[in-house]
Image (cartoon, rainbow, N blue to C red; front, side, top):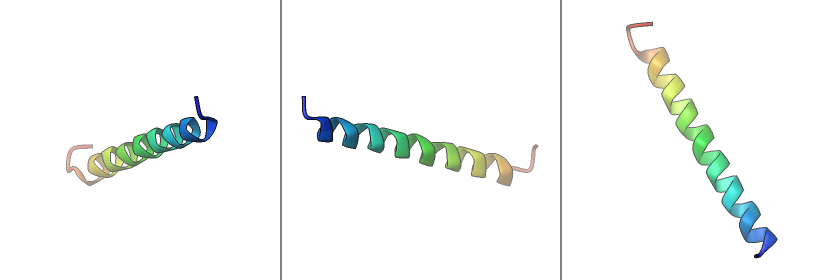
Amino acid sequence: MNIRQLLLGVTEIASMGLLTGAIALWAVALSPMH
């Protein structure tokens, strides 16, 4: 298996998870019910 390809996949998944987490946090912060 290509190390570079594996690294790219891991980075992509990590950034996707980070983005999802940020959007979820933002939605919770903006929602009126805390």
